[in-house]
Image 1 (cartoon, rainbow, N blue to C red):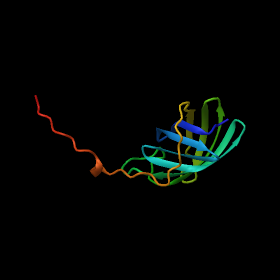
Image 2 (cartoon, helix red, strand yellow):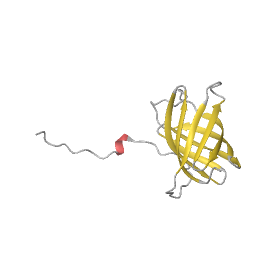
Image 3 (cartoon, one colour):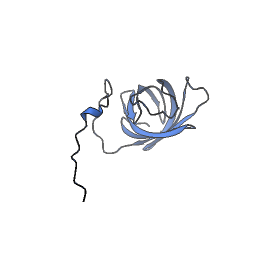
Image 4 (cartoon, rainbow, N blue to C red):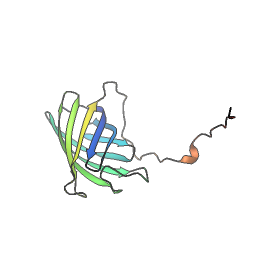
Length: 135
């Protein structure tokens, strides 16, 4: 059974692959990777699960595993045996493109709360680097 908690996520399409962090709690699923945030609902039936997940791009200039910069509504279905879940999914926006993935349960959990809005990267807030003399 897909337990409530935090998971390392790996996913791929024919266009590419990626990794991220996913949280599951109380029928909800959410997470993020280097390009997208995801948020949705989850239903469990024994070892099987289904989810509807909406993605939103948070980093400009990078492509997603679907190769496009749009928000997507993913329909996922999978199974979880032990600590590893496998799933497949589709996005109506990309007919015929299969998303495959794995979720690996994290045993050392910190309590995660669902973010309301992803943080924006501001390069002006980076610390200034000190110049060192060349030797």
